[in-house]
Length: 577
Image 1 (cartoon, one colour):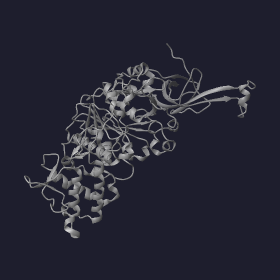
Image 2 (cartoon, helix red, strand yellow; image 1 turned 120 degrees about the vertical axis):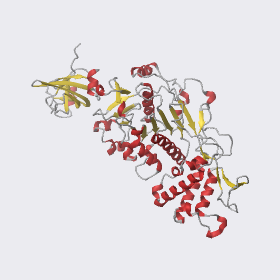
Image 3 (tube, rainbow, N blue to C red; image 1 turned 90 degrees about the vertical axis):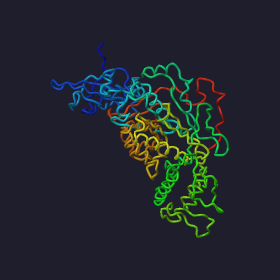
Image 4 (cartoon, rainbow, N blue to C red; image 1 turned 135 degrees about the vertical axis):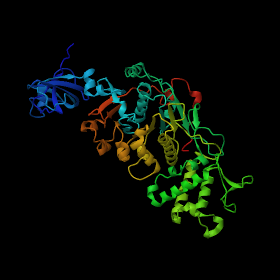
């Protein structure tokens, strides 16, 4: 059946090989519609594909604004012009000749749509939602999984842009589209930064209706929750206050995570307690020196605690002597801080002449040493329950886990504890990939990038995120990062993302240079995008695409769980841990 034209290329406005205007005769044409037109140039037929990015109506035959009232009353003759601007996405063959005015224009469907958006050239099309026309939208998997490009960056206002929801939908598509070559060995590390809404990913959503289920099926995806998920939460109690229990509103299937004092020292995790090392240049040297001394101290020790033989036992020494070992026991993070203070500032029992150990102080000024100790003392209040001497480490390890999705809750931790957990786990993942201990891909989902990789300042966690952004795709580490304001995130972290997604934006933020890859019309639309609608940009398609994605098939809060979990609910009002 021959397709009916919706209009023609206008001759009253300039038509070029890259853009033209059309007059609409039949039906409705809206923003984001994809069209095609053919033009004969002396025996050379060129087909133009393009996307509608502006639509206008105006009355022809009026001179003054008030003439509209006369026209509405049929007092003067007028015609309504319905016109649209088209940005060309592709020419076949690639001959840059303008289309002829009067050439019929058609809506692109099926094969024509695939040609217009280069889907025909994508060997592996990953479904990422629906276009406004209802047609499925895709990205080239090679630009997401690291082969030709990698990383996803999502921007938008918190609570409206649905950044985390869309990141999870992408994961659902990755694991269920049968496209990922190493799906059996691929792992995902998800940081839960707001509430514990991600602790029900394995539960079906009772609010998913049949219409939304059908949308999943149209994309070739099962309308089901994630099948393989592990959950981790910080321990509810501080060391010495009882058995380790995960601080979670979900009672079953959540494991408490923590680091032993010995592993904290052995793995060199001290720098992740300092997020502002750039504020004092000398502090960075001291952190490195103390980190190296702690690693040497922990070498060869087997238990979760440390034993040292160079801690003074006189007044103020603080060490507990075990006669069988003849050493002092460091069995908590607070005691470790006491030990470091003695090594840096000396033993108070020695009086005013007390001096630190030169092997530890790195010849730093006493003011720098005191500032270091003060910060470490403050850190003890925030991470004392995470760095313990009463149990061996139980650290989330997505590469060693049998689950595909590993959710680590950090929402109730202090800012410093959050930085420590995120930095320590990211370094663990990156080191494993660099050493070749895990060959499958690892996807990392992290919101609030502006906190962990800010544009200004230096920190160990920012260094790791830069490493992931710049070298991660070649190692198989893919960052799916999100933030409210891309303008506050390190440029190289955002700039290395092959797939960029935007939800609802603040008006001032939309004008920042970080969004210049979006045409002006899309930046304006980003101010009014409803929840569930995103603007997606990928390297292979020359124009952004507005997409919608299905309602989550997994529960996003306890009330949405399709089964009764009332007996699992626990009061979540324990405050910052």
